[in-house]
Length: 127
Image (tube, rainbow, N blue to C red; front, side, top):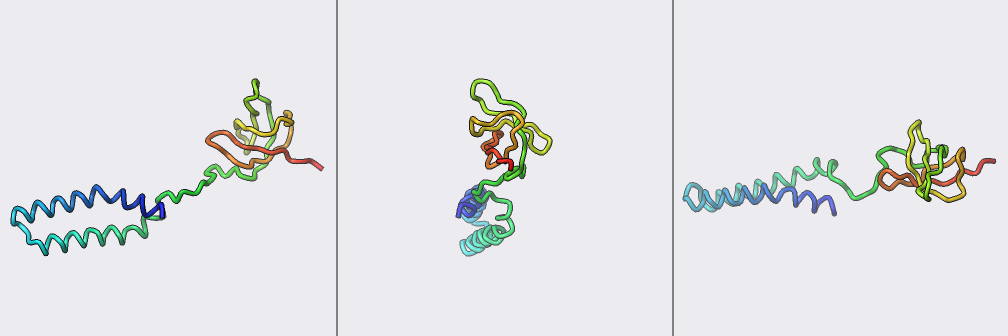
């Protein structure tokens, strides 16, 4: 439903321009009313038909993890001062992370979420 709304809002400027142009041409007696309505209907039909291939590129509202870090394991490198979280190495990269206070440098962790550039982590219990 959100994709339809976004697409309709994206089409409004073109639809307004086409309608205004057709109205102007009709008022100048360059085209008849039936011709203007046919062109306007074809313009709307074009927008409806183009929605189906275009919807793949429109945001659908779901939250995805573009970095693919959800569920990946890592290791705590350092506890940051002033209760600001941890530095965690995941996939050979250092990330700012937040998790439970009992984590120490060297602890194995798993990524359970992400908010912006801050990872949410939980400790992996080692057997």
